[in-house]
Image (cartoon, rainbow, N blue to C red; front, side, top):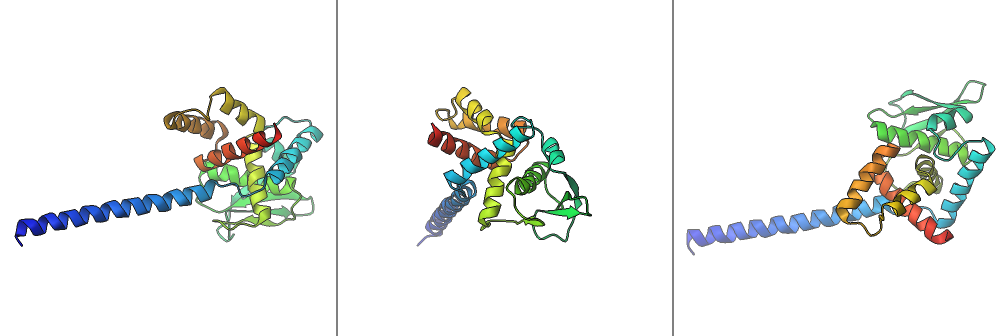
Length: 212
């Protein structure tokens, strides 16, 4: 066998290996992405959460989508500093005898991540969860944590406002490029990450399809 033939075979094997590796990596990434945006709570739990937020707004004479700072003030909770000792992304705890609550954060969170984590801790209060409570890292979260995640997204991205945006921009029938543009618009409008927006879009579509 000639040297040239050896080289051709070597290049071909290398090329096929790279193709196989790329396909495998893409498959793993796609599966991981789908796991991250899958709906972790039931439709009934989503509606219960939406109703709980609606009742809170009515009881406190505020509108859906009010700034977190306003909701936090009503609930007597505020942002604290960083705490490297906490095991998760943030921890909600009471301070002193005034029933004041403080959320301390794990360091190195981005501003968008911090915004959602703060909403998550506020969600625990709205859901009537006992404190102190820590938002864990990663997956395999308890049902309570999954519902708090849903409630946090619902606080930041009100159901009706997001649904109106999707209908107005014909999201369902849009091209991938158009959907990506809308995704960035929602990220900037609500100051959350792309993953939160994608999950919220799925949640809104699921709930609206059920109740109509």
